[in-house]
Length: 137
Length: 394
Image 1 (spheres, each protein chain N blue to C red):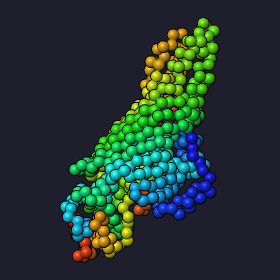
Image 2 (tube, rainbow over the protein chains, first blue to last red; image 1 turned 180 degrees about the vertical axis):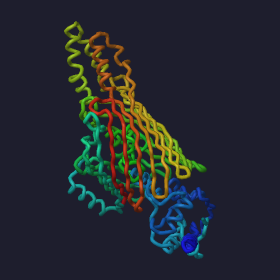
Image 3 (cartoon, each protein chain N blue to C red; image 1 turned 90 degrees about the vertical axis):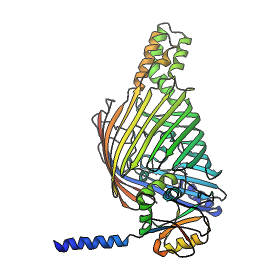
Image 4 (spheres, rainbow over the protein chains, first blue to last red; image 1 turned 120 degrees about the horizontal axis):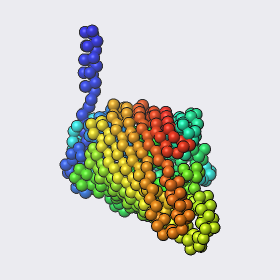
């Protein structure tokens, strides 16, 4: 019984430690202040602009990536399946295209660092000086 | 009218498009085993066989969408669909060109969805909702959910709210199943004007919409006049009805030239894993033998991780009124008209269902459902439907 409890505790600890903080990043020149509501609207296709009025182009990650799961859960308040169902409604009614999905944090950082209109999200531990963190979840 | 194309033509068209622009391909599919049975022996809905046997065709479909971005806000989209109910014959369900007037406004021309009800635009995309089939009392499968015309989609976001609107003008001709004749009857809708508004907050949305169109009765008028009215007209003439009496009667019972009016409203709540949907719609061909149709459904669901359990109830009722017969004077013609009203407005049904959705894959959901209801037609009466299937997007 004690071994079982210990196993559950260790499993929980491992699971807890694997949950990464999500950093939402933009180009360093972007001066917008963004909260979860702004970010959610942009990533769900409800808004195509930053609060400043500049065009916002969201870049996502593959749905199998753990950081994508965390972003969907913490920021969009949805499961990845819910997000996909949401975009299915828009995609197949001609109302929008889902964000481009890339494979790694590095690709997101590179895209954001080279385009002031792009907004993305990465594991907070992977952020470097080429991008600006506007929010962490 | 269905737009069925030869596969070779579709492939040729796509190859031509790829030479000129970037093409994005997406698709969706449903593979579903369905069994429907009724005490009366006839299927409860025209999309089922109704003999209780399992069918892998009745509710299965495949669709492929190609979207060509032609730069500077211009795009062309074609959606090809093959439904089991049509022997998987490929049809160009949608084919339209869109132009982004601004970040808020998009203009579309061509063949596209007519949102006669709130979820009509994506009712075929099973992955997009939690039902095996959207509640049939409301989503009864009218073919004029796809029309040819022009549409303006707009999105306005302010603070935490988003307002989506759609204004549409178009035409349609085709057919729809009529319970009273037991077959598909042809008719057309001219000068369709439609408007819809949806207000969304984080966890709720409310919506309302309406559309009006001028009817061309087509074979419905012929069925009414030839099948139902002819004996009454002959009897009335034998009892002294004049040509003017008959003309007035025909005007009162046919649909051509009358306005078809639809409206709907409802709300959706998705809060702390609880989901509640409600939609009510009302529609009628005014000043004709068509009864006022009142339809609604309410659904309550709960999300357990990757699983959603939903229970719902739905109902279709018809309110018969004989106002269109007020100009008719001859008693035999009045009686004939009332009998036609009664026949066309006789079908009503309701039902209760339970649906289970399990997202077992990032692109696929397993769904199971059981539905039981009662139809006023003696050929149907109590009925049941169950299904198991998979909905995909790719």
